[in-house]
Length: 530
Image (cartoon, rainbow, N blue to C red):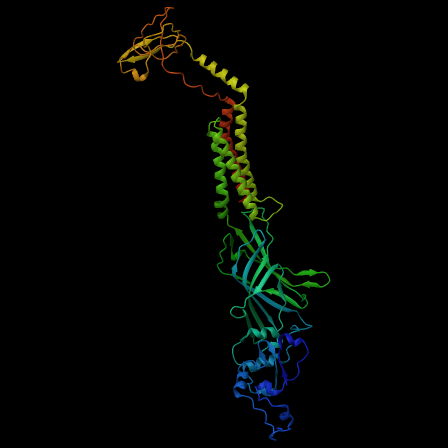
């Protein structure tokens, strides 16, 4: 009798021998009395011989791997193997596994096994800044030589056999794991995604599809103009370097085909390979290889989503410098809106990024914008202090009065006027009106086209005429004092609020100082971080 691989139960105790009729096919059930040859109690008939095995079942067992069904081991007799041609694939695989022990590595007590590794990347997920990891979907391929699996010389066929994945459980395999793995899973839709090749010289190639989430410590100092280096480390778990060595395949060990990421650029020429063999105290050195992906972040998303809006908010806060200082109802809400908008943007971005102890490039920009918006609000507070300072207001009134006196306001004014094409110099002085009635001596511009110099209504005795233009020949109105009078029906305009020159000067300086400082900050910022 011959033994073949039993999968997980091979390491346990050997199973009891199975009657031949259960191996070759179903046989007719016989009562215990017939098995003993006692005959039937009622009829005295002789026991029936066992039913011969079905040819269909025997032939079906020859077409598949005899003794290997769904990864379980079965006991086969020499007669079963004899029914299969000696040079058939099934017989050859059976002969390979007759004395094969998957618990022992190839070249046991000899040279270490060299495992050549290469990876094909199906998809590459974006880096998650909050969790500092990334997800990939790959084909992991491992190739090593096992002298016990050399195909016999009488095998006729190709140089490699594609074997069912169930046989993978019966072979020795490297104990590879991903050192920086957070989570991983195999794929089994629609079948288990494992490919197994056995070559004529004993080389074994295994390819499997995996989805892995790998950790990637990020340095966000230059965020969002940063470049990240994410590793994938493949390490042996139990075999030291005396037994096992991982080697990258020559050429392109990592194949990357036109992968587009939403926030990063990854190029094939930026991929680096290295050796990361590690030493663990008490156990020794363990083989390890790594691949480093260099990912450059695309700034376009943050330019449109962060930099442009915050820049416009800062510029909007400068509009208050052109608003009248006494219009507090317009300037205060504008400054508050700018500060609150920038603070809200800072809070939103802080929730989307990991809580690190260092300052990021984006933090510098947002803090600077927030300071500029806050400074514009503080500038208006300083203007209000100047505007409501009594000493400065009185000083401004005195300055205005002195300037009016310098240009001759409040005295006699000589003007040349024209009515109906004739020009007549007119001199009118301020006088007190003593009469209760007077003739119209001063007219508005709307009355210039008419010759209406009719008597107007009464004037109060204490009415003081101002120096307004009179057109035509003035009419003398004699009172008890014997002086000429002029009359003006217009009321003087309302007095404008006095704004100190210092307040106006602050707004004037801010219009130039704030844009210049912000421009200077931009030059320094982009020269450092780009």
